[in-house]
Image 1 (cartoon, rainbow, N blue to C red):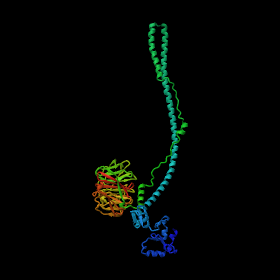
Image 2: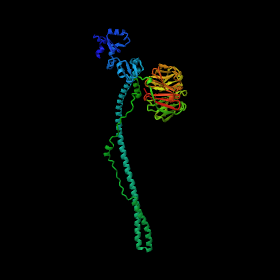
Image 3: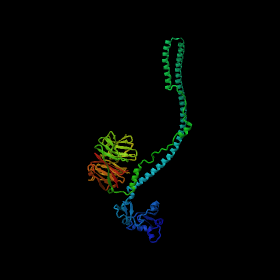
Image 4: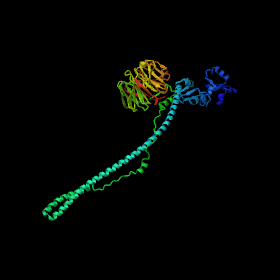
Length: 562
């Protein structure tokens, strides 16, 4: 390869050794000064792209090693097979691609590739990737510093914990001593009271003994008999008293002991540590963009762009909606669906099964909605009334803030902290999420009740005359499709990862897809597919699903394949 780069290919073919000064990428060979002049004058090669040899050799080695001829047949690539995603020479087509239908001239495939949206987006993605890597590096360095700070804080907290443990053990000892004193005093008092009672009974028994001794000597038999009866009753009571003492376990011996918790033995086993070092992991702050969505967009840009004729729709689900004026809809990454009902001032969230999950009461007309995946916030517009944007935190289902815009407001999308919206007579406008910055991007009247869409760095909107336009984020119009008979009263607009635009005709009861350059269109769905005044549609760029919502009754979820 190195000799091929440094010698003139034309002269080398004639067994003449001359150094090359230029390189023709289409001929894939170097040219000396003389051959360069002939090459530029020849009708067959005058339109070839030539670069200086020094500039060409500055290309990365992996680029220089790319051959533009078929290694098997040594013929120049002429065809690109979209099915196999590979370039082919004339013989390759005959041998291995004869049955492939999606073959294109390679000149058409690579035409204007350096100025194409895919190339520009790739540059932007590489720039964003570089910024993300820098942010990650800085974030990791910041993490190392925070770990050292955490260690210092924990050392102080462990010392404090040791002091608290000592204090706690002192309190435990004091409490145990109090408990011991209380137990001794309580039992001593109970026993003392019992001794007093027994002493009284002893005195009474002694008195009876004295009485019996006296009456035995001096009393008559009758007197003796009657006194014995009286003493017998009292003695019986005394016997019952003794039995009650035994029965009530008042004669049990009370002793005070303590159960040694074997603290000197158990502490090393049961309390092995006074704390646990925990490594907490949370989402990093270095990257705020959705990785899954970004990956889908990169894949869409690097793969051959499928045409609108490649699109295949498969009906996956029909959902019975609530309300009779569904203005807008969206699909969440987890498959849930959100619908805004204009007249009832409500937003309905449906589970993936098509069953209602919960309803939000907004307190005002709910026109169009847009869900911000990163922050889990739902942006809501209010149509001709209130003229404001409401931001709802979907975690606690509360309205977080309202941004007054001072005009009718319909379709809305979000990107990088900015809200782009349909301001009707106010045109296509943008306002920052904090409400501080607001400006007009496109000074045309937009379609009332219509959506807008965004994909990477391009916006799509519907004019009052039912025209469909594409512009950049600064308002520079890239293309415009005038009103066509196949669409009437366009309301909904959305876009997939390849820049193909989907629009819904409210009066024509259909959905049409438009090519990324706005030059071609194709009917996808019509009234026979169940469309009745389709007012909104949403393309899920992560899961490749298309949600279409009629103004009343039904919504449809389609799986979209190339």
